[in-house]
Structure formats: C-alpha cells, structure tokens
Image 1 (cartoon, helix red, strand yellow):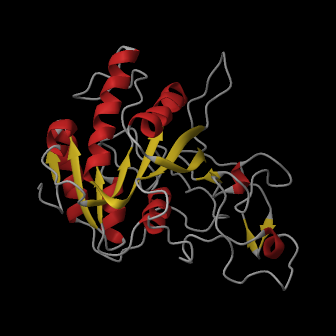
Image 2: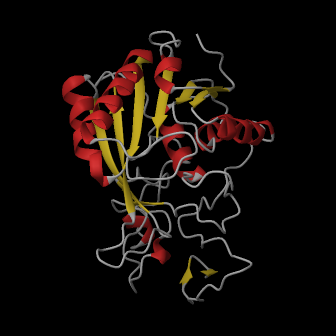
Length: 303
C-alpha cells in the first residue's frame, strides 16, 4: 500500500497497482484532456483510441481501489465526456449519481466559435445504494429560492442541496436578473486565473479550492482517505488536508511533486479554503488589472 499523506512521483497506472483493493474512500481525477496542453512530462496529443484505452485502464484501477461504498469524481472536457461516462458505466460498473456542469469565468477567448466556459464533473459511485453523501452539511447547502427570492418564512433555514449545474458567483453572469443563481442548476466557481491570490504559479490547470471543498465535504467524512491520481498543483490534497481527511496522490512530473509537496507542508488542518465561499462574493481584485465596477446591492452588500 502506498503511504498516505504524501505525493508519489511516477506513472499513475503503475502506482495505483500498489494501492490495496477497497482502501480508498474518494478518488477525484482531473486527467489530461487530450487537447494539446503543454505539460512538462506528458504528451497531451494522443490518438483517440489510445487516449480512451488509457483512461479506461486507469479508471479500472480506480474502481478496484475504491471501498465498496466509495465515490469517484471525474473532471473532463467536452471532447471525451460522453465516451468516458459510457466506459465508466458500461465497462467498469460505476453508477452515475450526478452529471454536474462546472461553469466558470476567465476561460480562453475564441474567435471562430463560442468561448468555452464549462467542464463536466461526473459523480460516480461503486454501489448505487451504499455511498457517502453528506446532504445535511451546512457548508454544502445553499439558500432556497423560497428564502432568497421570496423571503418566505416557511423556507427551511438550513437551505437546500445545490442542483447539478453549479454556479457560485451569479454576478459574473451578465444579466440584470443575475442569470444563474446559487439555487439553480449550475455550479459556478471562477476558474483560477493568473491574477488570483490562490493561484499556484507552477501549474496552469488549477481547480478552485471551493469546488473541491464541496466535493470532498459531500462525499467523505473526517478521517476518510482521498486519492488524486493526477495531483498537479496539489489542490485536491490541500483541500483534503484542510478538511481533516487523509490524502494520497500520484503525479508524473517530479517538478510538480516538489512544488505541490511544499504547498502541502505549509497547510494545517482546519485552515480556511482559498477563494470566496459566499456565492455572491466578488472576484478577487487584481493589482495590475482593472475591474468594471457594477453597483448592485444584495443582502446589504455592495459590489
């Protein structure tokens, strides 16, 4: 069994084979999307068949190492989302609980097509009836429309579960009526842009801590073991540590391992997650840029 509490450097397939059967509570995987991104060790330009075969192979290992009641979250882009969902369900035996859309700002601007501002988050479980889902965790729940929009006193003061398309900062959606709101079906966490305080400069594909926080809180309990086969900047493990979970990672790049391990050393259990937890919090200010000032008042806050 690979030692927990650290990142192991090497090929994820080889390293996962050293993990005991049924020993992991949660796997979160944000693999290369096979879209030509420049990694320092990995070639992100594989033939379709080769890439899909590789994904099926490492997902098979994920299924093996998960506990009988374990959970697997997969982040993936449009290009292979459908194929990987089918492979996970039909070939490997996972059950799909949710197909979440992560909507973000600060995406790449396109000239000849609509600019992409989303990724897919598949929520798989090994047993469709026995799995962890902490629906009553107050850090997961959001205000209901009955409370937020109508001010109805009958609204549940504990809020409600988010829908399966997540939006956390409605003011970034360009609409006088807010567009998507927290109680609707889009998860909105801004992509971690280069000027954001939480940005780790050594890795270009960094997930927001608040997004990982929602996933880890809802799918694990304190003390559970979280594994990330593509550790990258270390965000999954950083959030797991902050939330009091055990953690384990693998990463191909030695450089990324060194930087991410240093990041983990500076984190203590119980530390707050980076990024705005309030769905109506504004984007981090920048020192070298200019942000348009929009005057809107929500719950007494001006932003």
